[in-house]
Length: 196
Image (cartoon, rainbow, N blue to C red):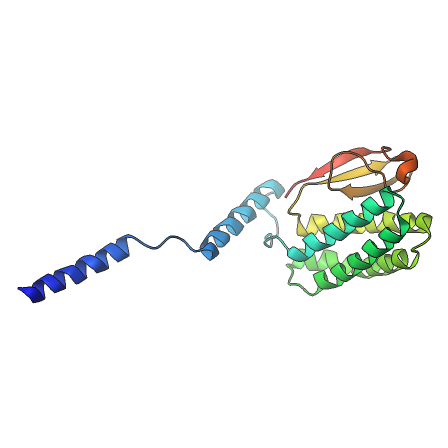
């Protein structure tokens, strides 16, 4: 009778294990979240879109250093702007070494040379804030193109200054003008909200 009892206990144990799977691992959850984010992006951009790559830490680093640079210029801190620009240049090089889908690679290749050159010029012009601001205009257009290709993990605002006839990206909705700094800190309007 004991062999049947042991066999029955073993069968019940196997059935319980199979019908009661372990909780999902983080990897499974991440895969589901990535799939959902991809579907969501496809719905927003339209059915005939290129597949979205999961959020890129390299792009987050680029945005972080760009925002640091923007805030330094808005506060009239030329040396801090030069430091941020050097960090941004390094982040752009790192971004280029990461895997990209075809659309991202095309956007990165199109503007990477110009961005690196522009980033170098701003960091070299560490004491001339007016020259830094001139270079920041083209850089802002390039970063905007990258954000459109790679996406963002945070809400960004594309601001426009009619006096400078130039745009920039900001992490906050309130205007902090990097082209005129404290002299005209609130000159500008939000033209676009970019969401994750």
